[in-house]
Amino acid sequence: MELKGHHLVVLGYGDVGKSIVNVLSGGPFRFVVVDSYEKVFENVEFEHLIGNCQDEEILIAAGVKTASFIFVALNDDTNVIFATLISRSLNPDATILARANSVKSIDKIYKAGADFVGSLSIVAGQMLAKMTANCMGKSCSLDEDIMLYEGIEIEKHYVEKGTFLENKLIEDLDLESNIGCTIIAFERGKLIITTVTRRTVIKAGDTIAVVGSNKQISEFKERYLD
Image 1 (cartoon, rainbow, N blue to C red):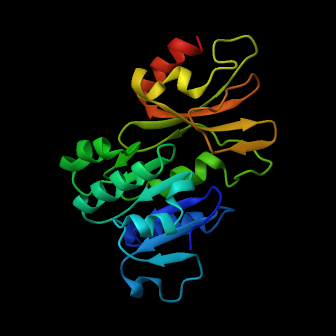
Image 2 (cartoon, helix red, strand yellow):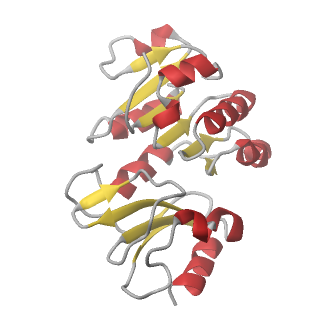
């Protein structure tokens, strides 16, 4: 059954996948977990699929095409690369966070289409939970700026009226190519918006959540905020 609507997909339910699910289960997130081993899902209550995370049909059934976030938490880097590649081809707009089991694989995983790659097993679920402050489409505020792994940060910035960012499309900025950072969420009024596409318009009064390295975020602030 193919899922409809924006949600999250976790590929792999080993130690890292379980850590992510533990965080997601405490919030209002709609998510589905995929793993090839039926045994790992004994006595679980969350939505899941049994199947190969590199199988396009399985990924479509899990709703990868409409997911806002995709976590690739497999324990073999070759599998991570292929699952990331297929997920990116199915959903060009999703934010993909992938686990690297070896630092030697990080560059290959980025080239496969991941937005962020972590070689530590503690970060993905924590990042999402803090970034959304336990609210997706609910009345709340973005959390404080977050220091992540390997020099990656999330910072929030308010868009003033009359400034450069006002009424700009995400694709107009092309931050991934020009700087390397990414806008992954908005606080607009009382709503948190995590579905950000290239056609999303930045408006005055928005608070934007920007993810990138220390250097990338500094360059973003120098170009667009200072």
